Image (cartoon, rainbow, N blue to C red):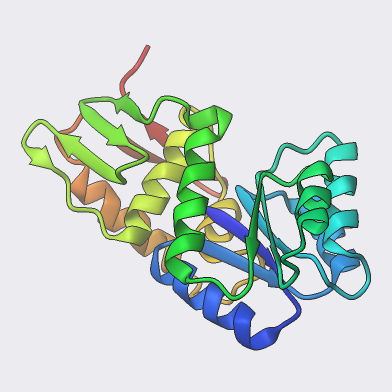
Length: 223
C-alpha cells in the first residue's frame, strides 16, 4: 500500500516510516499540513496517517478539507491529546480511527490492517487471478503447485498490477506505489522487479506484458 504520513515530529515520523517500509509499504512523509493537503489532493493515498498539531493546517482542518472534496481516503489521526472532546472532534471531522501518543507500532499496523479490510475495493479478501489465488488480507499468493514465494516488494508489484488488471501501468506509477512519490530509486529497479516477478508467474496463466515506452500490463488470460 502507499501510505501518506503527515507528522511534524521528525524522530517519530522516521520511526513510523522505517517500520512501515520494512513491512513493504511505500511511504510519503510530509510535515506541513497545508503542503500535505495539496499533496493528498494531487496524489491520493491508500491510507493517510495524520497528526493533529501541524504547522500550516491542523489535522482536523486537513481531514475536513479531504471529506469536503469527496475523498474517501481512510484516515488514522495521531495526537498527544487524550481528552474525549478532541477524539470526538477528530472522528466528527471525518477520520476513520484515532490513536493517542505514545503508542506501540504493532497497534498502528493493526489499525492499518483493519482499515485495509474495510476499503471498498478489497471487501472480498481473496481474488482469483488466472490460476492464482491472491489473498490480500493474508498477503499470500497460491498457485497450482502451492504457495508462490513473493518477497514484500514483488508482492506489492503484483498487487499494483492486479488492481489495474487489463490496463497499462506506467513505470512512474509503479515506482510511486512501491517506493513513494519522488523517491530516489535506481533507473532499472522497476524493470528488474518486473523480470523477477514474471519468472515466478511462469505456468500460472498470468503474464506481465511490456508496452514499450508506456509501462506494463497484467494479462490473466480472461476474455
